[in-house]
Image (tube, one colour):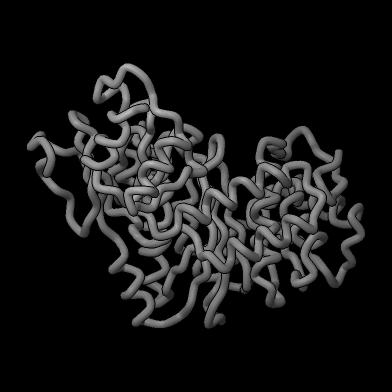
Amino acid sequence: MEEESASFSTAKNVFYNPAMKLCRSMSSLAVGAIGERIDVIDAFCASGIRGIRYAKENKNVKHVTFIDIEQSAITLAKKNAKLNKLTKSKFEAKKGNISRLAFETAADFLEIDPFGTPAPYLVDAFRYFNPKKAAYLSVTATDVAVLCGGITAACMKNYHSRPLNNEFTHETGLRILIKRIAEVGAEFNMETVPLVSFSDKHYLKTVLHVKRGAEGAYATLKKLGHVSYCRKCGFRSHGVFPQEKCARCGNSNEFAGPLWLGELHEPAFLKKMKELNKKRHYSDREEIDRMLSLMEGEIGMPPYYYNVHELCKLHRFTESMKMDALLNALQKGGHRAKRTHFSPISIKTDAPYEKLVEVMKWKK
């Protein structure tokens, strides 16, 4: 089989998900955008395709360590690494539990991509950084139903946060994931800075720069808070604490949190990823470029978005305003307004809610 730069074999009892190709491409661009020379650990390596691509596509990767608890995965990862001409000095493979290996292995870049929730592995993830002043953590969560409000009890148990199942639930879920990572990082006196974060298909993904320092760790925690949402009128707000009543109609609010209220992306980092993407021949290159452009527009916006179709339904508008016309009208009114990668029928804007509804109501 082939995936972008890599040729590899699969096995019956070793997991490989072709639907995660775009995720692996985005993540490989992130590895390259880091620039500095790094040792990479591909935990839960399975076939090894992710770590192999990181090593083949990025000159700044010095060494890759494949980790998996299954011997069949380790055997396959070794075979695939050799198939892709990774030398013995370029990689090693360790069979074992990632929690136990954290006490004897260090990483500049750690990839955590388990089946389901990454929450049980976060404490051990930060142990891989014990000798480091700074490092990079890449986390994938496939328990989207939990993070996005479908299973409230599981979210509170795994992530210590209340989710919210509504039109912007995927951003809420992503922010809950980052919050949990930031909490654990703070316990290790490490500041957490998201470099690139996104939602796609059945998973949520974030790549973060973690830096040691008590002051930075505390500053990270000050970026946590809640999002409040009124299901009756659609008004939403954010702050340190949830708002019990809707400021617009007085109805009782629902809320999500604690969650991450800071930025999901770092602008200079996205720019580097876009530049790298132009130089690579990925089959998803155009889609990745569109995603990164949309993500650039999300920077500096409130921690939620507006589904235009849902707002039309809620306010009983007989027809939906064209997206470009809506964005132009908001921008002409002096507000920032952009499409979002979370949903093709949604926008992000800093315009007051009443202004957004007024613009949508007034159609020409």
